[in-house]
Image 1 (cartoon, helix red, strand yellow):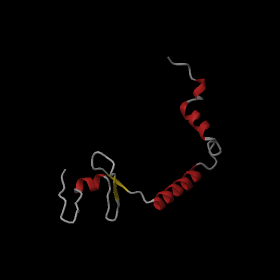
Image 2: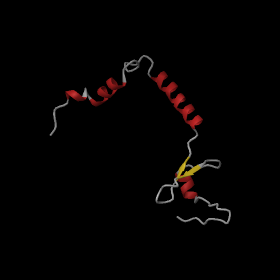
Image 3: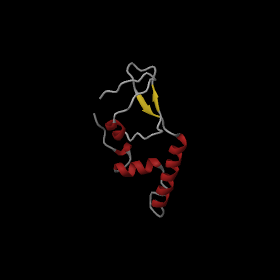
Image 4: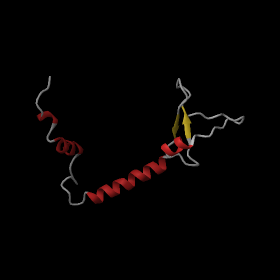
Length: 93
């Protein structure tokens, strides 16, 4: 895909890319001036990100009420999901 830079240094991001990456008016992009190619990344609004994580944690906490995993440590959850502790797995060459 191609875009032409205007005399003011503006470009239009092709519609297919805006849709693929869900780019909306007002979104900010940052450019890596040290990269060997031109790259752009969406700037993540930290306040919105933290609000989303808080919301997810609240939903997860409600989902885990009265569940055996509710008070489990992360390492124990991973062991449970893996079928047992890693150190109990047979040695592999």
